[in-house]
Structures are given as C-alpha cells and as structure tokens.
Image (cartoon, rainbow, N blue to C red; front, side, top):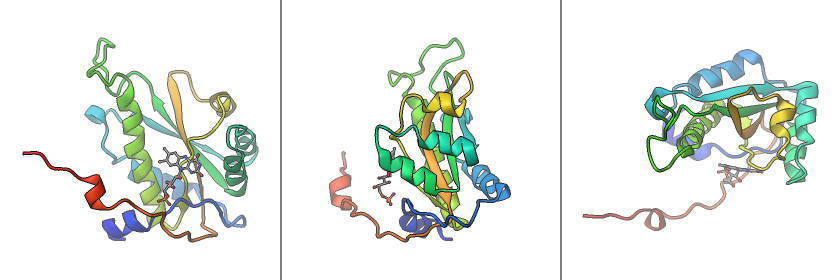
Amino acid sequence: MEAISCIKTRRSIRAFDTDKKVPHELIEEVIEAASFAPSWKNTQVTRYIVLEGEAKEKLAACTNIWAKNGDIMRNAPMVVALTVVEKRSGYERDGSFSTPKGSGWQMFDCGTASEAFCLAAHEKGLGTVILGLYDDNASEVIGVPEGQELVALIPVGFPAESPEAPKRKSVADLVSYRE
Ligand SMILES: Cc1cc2nc3c(=O)[nH]c(=O)nc-3n(C[C@H](O)[C@H](O)[C@H](O)COP(=O)(O)O)c2cc1C
C-alpha cells in the first residue's frame, strides 16, 4: 500500500470479526515493522505485551473509567499493551534529563511506535484502535515488568466495520510559517 494512502485510510476500528484470531506470525510482522519507528538516540524503548484469552478478559475489566473500552477489548481477539522501558529515552547516562521536557520523550517515542504499529497492521488487513482510557490497576493485571510503564492498549483484529474518517482540520488551521 502506498504510504499516503495507508495514512489516510487507516481508521480506529472498534468492531472485529470474532471468528478470526490474529496469527502470532502476523502480529510479529507488525511489531517488526513498528520497530523501524524513530526513537530518541535509537533507544527503542517501546515494548509490546500481547494479551489473549483469559489475560485479555481480565484486562477488559479494568475499564471503569470508560466502559466502552472494555466492550471493544472483549470483542477483539487480541489486545496489545504498549509499554516503555523507563529512564532511557530523553535521559543522559548519569540519569539526568537531557532536555526540559523531562520524561516526556519516552511517551513521544511510544507515540511514533504506536502510529507505525497501526499503519503496519492496516497494511496487513488488521484493524486497531489506540486506547488511552483504562484503570490504574491495568499495569498490575497485565503484569507489566518492573522498570516499564504502561502507555496504551491497542485491540487488534480483522475489522467488522469500515467507519468514515472523522473530520480533519484544514491545513490552513494547522500550519503557520515564520521568517
Ligand atoms: C492517545 C490516544 C488515545 C485514544 N484513546 C481512545 C480511547 O480510550 N477509546 C477510543 O475508543 N478511542 C481512543 N482513541 C482513538 C481516537 O478517538 C481516534 O484516533 C480519533 O477519533 C480519530 O479517528 P481515526 O483514528 O479513525 O482517524 C485514542 C487515540 C489516541 C491517539
């Protein structure tokens, strides 16, 4: 798929074909593609924890903050939890921050990886949606390793819907120039 077309036709998918599992080889191809996302000094701090079956059901219960996200996760055959290895991206070797943005760069890096992940999945016929609303206990329920921080949950599956693109702002609203 051509890059601009992939970027523009990717949609957040919240309904999945419940009869079709996502083969592990396929999700690993997506993760391999996402590993080419840019990151701070190529630190590559993003990690992917794949949840299926009982582990996914337990995670879906961690959505008191926004119950609809629980429904999406129950409907999806797989949820991928994106975490970051802490204190590397945006940090100096002595542990001090490299810039005034502090620990913000590790979130930025997980963002670039998330977009690459969703685009690669789209190219391979998989639907995804990034979920930022989950309860505080989600990390514990997933079993996020010590030294990593949970950032986002991404349900993955073969799409059972093809939503219209939500309206985008015009370039004129987005861009400004300086000389
Ligand atoms: C950081 C982030 C958090 C999001 N959290 C949620 C969420 O909790 N639940 C949800 O249904 N969608 C969530 N979304 C998806 C957005 O609603 C969606 O990307 C936006 O409406 C644009 O639609 P599109 O992805 O189809 O272009 C999130 C997206 C991002 C980037």
